Image (tube, rainbow, N blue to C red; front, top):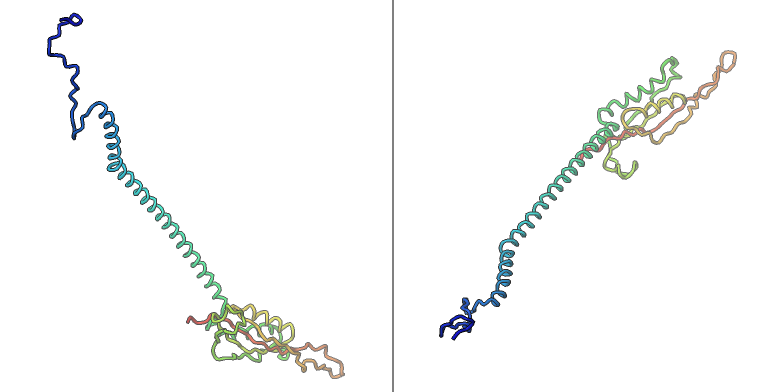
Length: 242
């Protein structure tokens, strides 16, 4: 028997037998099964790579970046803190210089010891060239009201001064004409310690208003009125530290 001109031996026709596919875990790996399993295996492999390799590295990078930003922020904060400290130190130095300059305006024990001499020098300076003792200005009184300086606590110079400054008060009295008195007061105000004039009172000396006559009974010129001036001189100084 011939088929298409070829001789086919009897008993050798295997066209109806199924292919011999491998079996894994009881599953035959046919082309259809492989077509399903290969994408799944690829997805599982990708997930495994992401979960066990890529994700930890990514998370580590995120953590490192956060740490870098934190360190950079700390550096910025440290620079800002250093700048603020430098500014504060500069302001403190300026405040200390200002305080030192202000304190030089106030009196101290050494200056108070010479205050009487300083005031008397101002009085004597207006007598230059005056030989008549009756026409010279005189310092008739200079006495402290208390033995020691007193802490200011009565807000007489403003509440912020309370407990910060102390004062030494002197009762002063002098005699002289108006020009002499005015010159002396202005000279006292220019003294180096910070001095305040209080309770100022000036009265005309009645004896200086007596009209003098010569032997013929003619007036010897118009007399220059003399003033008796009393006031309190307050020397301000820093209070001792508590």
